View 1 (tube, rainbow, N blue to C red):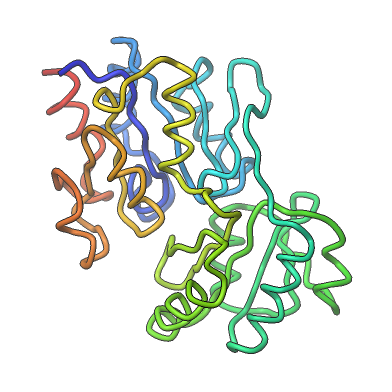
View 2 (cartoon, helix red, strand yellow; view 1 turned 90 degrees about the horizontal axis):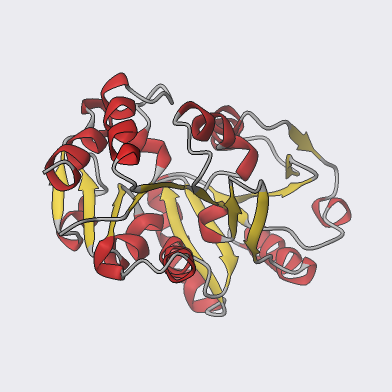
Length: 265
């Protein structure tokens, strides 16, 4: 099988634990691109927190999926070709839900992380994205328009229960885990799998010609959609049997292994 698109989650998949791309991964991704394969970054991250990595991998002729599939950017044209937001009302409802369920909540306004509270988990998001944290007195007053997504944040075991409850309480929204302490919420029908489908149809690439690589719950839809769905070894345990292959971990150049085994052969 000749694969034409390689879709990569970033944190805990392409990136090592110190948020860098290993030389081994970069080398193999350049080789994949030389063969004409589209290398597509697909992350829960906001778009600005991905562009440096796209430049490092010289993905100038490719596309980038951010906010868990809610935004697709054409890197060659430097323009957004798909965007889906949560309404102000939906975000306010999620805020009320977060208060009731005792979780932190963040969203993104004017390129900044917005929350009413401080938390070690919000600090993780700030560190990962490099975005400024705007702590506000009143969340609803600060969110006066639509935004791409929200994240509910809390201790992992507790958040698992919140995930079950939120899916039942708001079945009209897309809810998934990106890290054990990040519960991501986006508009209905928004996920990485749906965005890959949109992109593949635009580029006339068949489902069977796509490889997707991930590690977490927010990657599951793209792992299931792709012709070849691959987990890195540090995948969340409950997802291990839901892909086609498992390769080395994010710290042991699992992405390079995917290119070597399935694209260069």
